[in-house]
Structure formats: C-alpha cells, structure tokens
Length: 346
Image 1 (cartoon, rainbow, N blue to C red):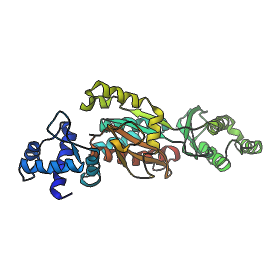
Image 2 (tube, helix red, strand yellow; image 1 turned 30 degrees about the vertical axis):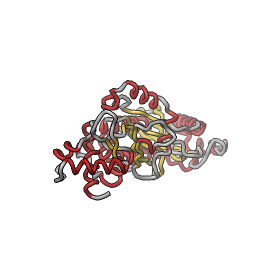
Image 3 (spheres, rainbow, N blue to C red; image 1 turned 60 degrees about the vertical axis):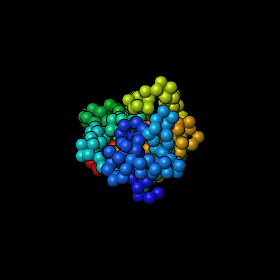
C-alpha cells in the first residue's frame, strides 16, 4: 500500500470511529488536507475497496473500514495515545486506596475500564493448575480485626475478616504468617498431616483462636475446585453507541453478555503471556460475534499470569485509547495485587 492510500485509509478509519457515519471523498478532502482532489481520493477509495480494506454499506455512497482495514490501521497506521495525567492518577488512586480486599480490587478494575473506555469491561480470573497452598498473610485492619489472605499456587486468592483480641499486635500476626508459610507452603489437602498440625499448635498455641480460623480458611481454600470466573462492568455502555440503536443488535449483544462460559473461553485464549492483543470482528473465530472487537492483556501475581483484563466493543471502537487504557491498567493491577497479597511496594 503506497503512502497516499495509507493516508486515505487512515482518514476513513479515524472519521468513521469519530462519527459512525460512512465516509465520502469530499469529507476526506475537506477535513484531512491530503492535497489532492475528491476525484483522486475516489480513485484511491476504489482501489482500497478492491483490495478489501474498505466496504460500501448498502444505503450509502460513503465507505466504512472492513475488518482487514481495521487490522491494517491497528498494526501499521495507529499512533499510540498517551493517557492524560488525570486518567493515570485515577487508575493509580483507585487501585491503591484501601486496596486490601482482592475482590474489591478486581471490581474496581472492571469499573475503571468501563468508565475510561465507555465500552463493556471483562476481568477474568483463571484456574491455573494444581491446588496447593502458596502463601498466607495476616493483615491487621484495626485493633480488633484482622484479614487472613490465602494465596494458592494456581493464582486463586481467598480472604476472610476475623475478630482478634486487642492484645494481638502486628508483630504477632507477622510471626503467625511466617510460621504458617514455613510449614505449609507447597502442600495440599493430602499432605497436611496430623503431626504437622500438632507442630503448629505447639509453636503457636498461645494464639490458638487466630490459628484455628487461619487453618480453617486454608483448608477451605485447598478443598475448593477453582473455576474461571468473569466479572463484567459497564454492561449497558454499548447501548450509547450508534450501532446499538438497532433493537436486534441490542438483543444479540445482551445474549452474548449472558453467556459467561463463552466470555470466559474467549478471554482465556485471548492474550499472550504479556502485552496487549487485539482481535477484530471476524478474527474472533468460533464465536458468532463478528460485529465486535476485543482488546485484552494479562495481569499477574508475582510475575505469573493469573487472569486477563479485556474490553468488548463494536468493531468501530477507539482502538488507540482502549489499547493504552488496557495496557496501563493491567500493569497497575499487577502491582496492586502484589501489594495486597505480599505487602510489596508499600
């Protein structure tokens, strides 16, 4: 594709993303200053249509990008859009403020993603293999309450608030955490022996109440069969998009969002071990969602992928902004989770 065709295609994609209206040669000539006549632009548009990069809707003389056109735009023409300082600060502050409950961090992530993109957000927590104990942390929330956080080696995180005597101080909880981690790390239900439990009670007997509750949560966590779970945010955001003023499209969209298994499968295979991936319309094979695109990236715990954050939107989505938001948000989510679970970065 030569330089002029690239400029015409870029103009068509940008204008259609902004207006949702098919783009004509006169519009491009007036708005984008390519220095050529509408007739020349029409010739270039005819070539682009023949090459499969743009299409002509039935009811209009203007053109719209095809899936191939969007892909070329994302891969070669799109300029990275930096987030504003306010957007970056909003993400950091929301994930840092009182971010000690893992479920709340995940929920905030989805809400932020839908708020900043105006599309539907999806946050997937994944099953990651064997269900062994990895880490426990007891965090004092106030003088009479402690949060017990249990991390499994498949990335699953469980937490429970427990009542604790006011005589318990932070250093006591740190000691409890260290002993539990030293004794139990890497074990599962079958390998936690009675003799091991006796050792724990011998060492930590004076904190029997807390130990009982911590072990109960650990054993419950080990017994759970972890499954992929998906959290949706901004489900109705897409109703504001011009594409969804059509009742049938709305029904189709809501039908897709009701299929939790489909969305889990879609996101679980969506992203590589790192970086943002973009799948556009018909590229999303095996799923009847040709009018949608998905932008997704993995998030990690201790450097290990444990889930995926994604945005579901129309193929006409603002890819430059969505990619930047997903990239920045997943990196900060990984930092927030390390802080919540392990106290890193405090």
